[in-house]
Image (cartoon, rainbow, N blue to C red):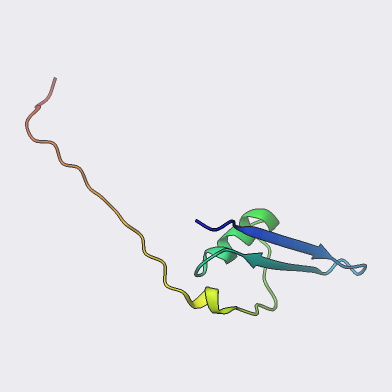
Length: 70
């Protein structure tokens, strides 16, 4: 898995800009919200090609037979 990196800059007027590297899909927005706070609103998003990459999520279910209540 490639390294995931977030670079945050705050200018002299207090405006925040952030750039992500190594993220695939919209997960980068989740990572930014975790860092900046859930109430933070992104005014201007400039997505890269990686933003549009579909990510796969694998789920497995394990079912056990037998047992019963103890």
